[in-house]
Length: 335
Picture 1 (cartoon, rainbow, N blue to C red):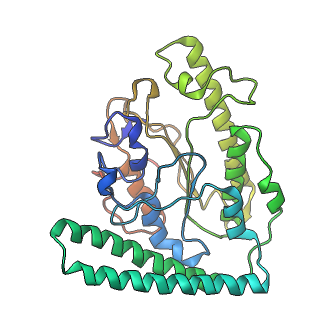
Picture 2 (cartoon, rainbow, N blue to C red):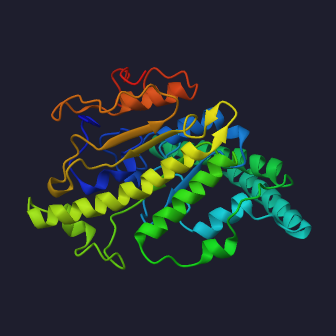
């Protein structure tokens, strides 16, 4: 506890910067910075079918940003994610997919050439925008090449079927369970090693214990009844999260468990939603081979840079990182 992003405004609109640490940015100008997951993906993403999975259950804004601060599109359809990872195409479908990838590469070639020809005729501000677009095209080309390399490799077999994935869920709890199940399968099969899952505020629909909406409960104004309802939402949230951690812990690997080799970070952009406060953000780090020391507190008013933890997490993945975002050091307490 006692961590946050220095300079972070007290606002709902800070979600997109939670993994970059940029205090403020103008989305219209695409001014952010690279996110934690994308730095990690640069280190390990070339070794798996998917360099990174950017998932977002309900929220429209991206949590992932490339090195030029351009948002990376996220997946919000569970069936689409499942197909990409686990549904084997017929030979004709595989050939069709390869043709699609080659066509995409050809289109990107044309776009890159057009951007290059434009670059010499524009002013400084527009040239900066062209550079952003060129970086995005270059990254898309790398992704297409990786997809082509994996297009004819067999996909892993998993106990879940597409029909199960396509079944509608009753409430946000079961929907969240579904996403976390995908994440477990993706990590277990080494389909990816980097995942971001974004969720929004929940609702009380079809959850008998919940009597008011999540937004109302979180903006409680110190009303005891609303705080009690908020605790019920949080209990549900952490019950699903603990089951996910248990699945990772129960998945054996040669040198331990999947949880031992997986850093799992749970956090939010608000420390106190009722006050829209960005101080003292909730931060939970599990697994990852650390020597966990239980609750590490820097004091509720300290607002120690959360990016100090991000530096430690990147080093744990083998990234030679001295700084990230607003960091001014590194978290040493977790070994």
